[in-house]
Amino acid sequence: EITRSVPVTVVNVPAGKNMLVYPSVVEVSLKCSFPLVDDPERGLRVEADYNDLQRSLGGRCLLKASSRSRGVISCETYPVSVSCILEDAQP
Image (tube, rainbow, N blue to C red; front, side, top):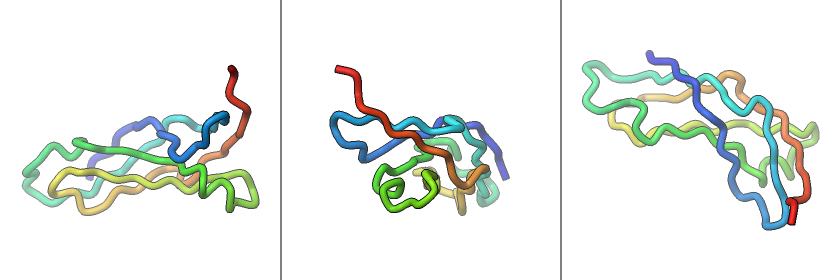
């Protein structure tokens, strides 16, 4: 098991909007097979999806963590969700 701090990337935000997330960096726990055959951090990504925020009642997004590394069995984030604020993009 490996733990890393990873910035949260926002996705699917429409033009003219900004989506801010707090916290903007989360801890990711990677469970890996042994022996390691690939860098477990290769392609490691944590996303907050604007579409999930639209369905949210409390202004929070569940995070989705993923890795493209062979040998990563699972990715878990702490916290599991982030607070989100929408604002109009500055021209």
